[in-house]
Length: 504
Image (cartoon, rainbow, N blue to C red; front, side):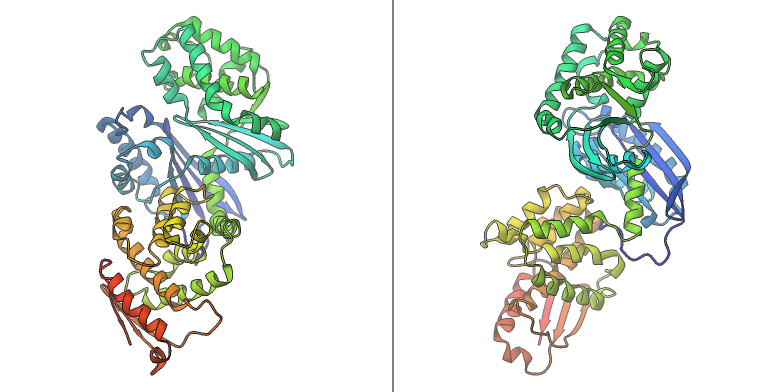
């Protein structure tokens, strides 16, 4: 839950990625060879998670059972692998599901590894990372389109770097349910579905056209299926063209019903969501003025592997994000560095007693220390609340939604009254360690209240499950009355957190 450590005793020889999409679940396993990835195993199952999302935004029991069965099978392949060599992410459906947290507990048990839920723009970043690594090296500007079960990602980038990325609330599952739910493919329904897709794209159209691109590339099973169909029918020789899409649209309407679709290149399992996927892609083509699109075999799961490799090789996107946020929000990074150094030192001293292994928790503590004052960009009063809001609701590249919530909780709780309810709302598995990390951050911030370069004394730090003891050199607290007063008040603040503070 707290992200991968930056310290690997030995880089993994095999890595894996799992994509819990709204239509399909994908698993890919690759061997790491001289920094390159060699795929050694792939599994895909049509789980249709998005189809099980009911009107109240809860997953029905049948869909949950189907998903857990799939993850159990994936887990048989991955269970022996260490957690830091596996990344599993959920996308649109798990972003929407009200009961996602409860489902994830069972899902992680079935898979045997933690599962992250990523925000739409983070999904877009990972898609672009996967697609760009599968293309010929080039500095040309590319538009990447990925149609999932519940969302469609649009990214413009150069090389391996995205310039702009959006995640739109439409996908092959959601569109098929909305417009072709009874299986019928009527002309008016198809026209309305395409218009609905264009309306989703419309808010970003101007910006994307101004940026422009030299080549358009599609990824995902939906787009690959469309390519296979239009090429098998002879409507397009290379990739997907706008005229070919319109021929396909006409063929779907002529068939009249999903059960009557007889298109070479279209699998039986793809049929139920195919009309919605065609409508989405045609809407994107028409609204953005695309004439021709190439197709990539790489997508989100490959992006996950490359992102994992970056973390292993100390090129973590989260580190870059934290640094950029500090600059954007004018944080005092010199002061943050002092707080970070002291916080890490406290973690080292308390790690065993508080069950906080350094390698597992140092990243999150460091990021929270670097960003603990970002709320000052809004106002000094209650700035810990402003900072928490910014971190929980901003687009943080590289971070999962769970990680953002934990990071926000640490910043929210680093000063004043301890917000126990904020931490209780976190997943049960991370509540206790998050509280203890927050106490460490509070101590580090308190000890640097003077905001100067004065070296702290040698403090004897010890702790037990529900206590923290700080022993200062003789006479030091008497000479530093402000710190003494702060520690006295801190004893009261930490009672709700279940920590008894002793300082002398």
